[in-house]
Image (cartoon, rainbow, N blue to C red; front, side, top):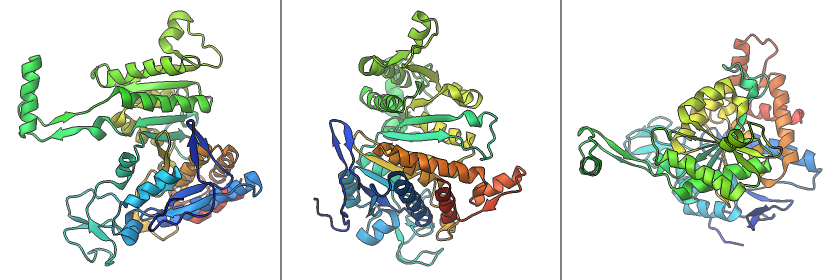
Length: 447
């Protein structure tokens, strides 16, 4: 057992990874980061739903053991830092954790208040909320730093429709796919050089000398690396998911018609990885049509690719043709948000960041500090992320109960204010608006 300064590891079963497989006992210890702002409300709602589902599914033989971890405002209070090293090490030790949303500064101010997200040019008392224990120097995204420090290379976003959620798309009921977005390369590992800077001018000159191509001298310059290593492990993760969940296809999404040696190579290397490591269970779209006349062999996973701009049309017009999509970082960023809008944006959808050994599940929305402590907001994102966590642990029965409960609550229109407003706008008269914790209880009641 590792000794930590502020983290107390409760009695339970430590999750292990042996031979690439997760080993999970009946009382797994799960890292739990409350988050800032509405994390105060949605995290307890999520815990109550998960505990009820696990108890109902396994009759008390299994249960979650929550281990509180600290970052954001709680990290500042416990360690004097919004991103404590000990929290990173605790997640690495526990292997699985779930977190609420964290404040991310976006302006130029030097300091930010982690209570209310207000930004200002001095430390001490917050000019907006008046509290004096939450102001810290501005910092880089906590979410991004977790991904980088733990090498969580795959951002996983399941997108599915729940009957009863108002949606702008006529084919929303056919949406049920998972996005695997590469988390460490492309623009996340890129370099951005200001117009007129020495580096920008040097690159412009080098390009002209080596290729003869001219770039306007008043241009800013960006570099985006995409590697064989980064591509291979992301596509491998997507294929492993497709195999485990018995899904029918994996689609490589790219802009290789223009960027042939970055995004085009992402596509090429993805196909090569599929053929080399999953050749017994996959078939390429080219082989399907060139050799099999379009007749898909039973039990095989189709590996195909689509140009990035066209996929935005296709997920709207024929979404049921896709089950897993694997993308470089920036394309995946765009597509994730566009896709969740297709199905009405329930809590903005679930998400996880994963490596081969570690999984960090998360709410995929902001902290909404004006609603903190009001027991008002939709906890759906974090609850559905917990469903992903249960599937990751192999506790599919409990995960299925939560989905059943959420389907029932939405179908019966017993929902939080955001969905209630949309449902009423569409003419429903049987809507019951409930609190954040009330939505959790509505889900539990229908398991």
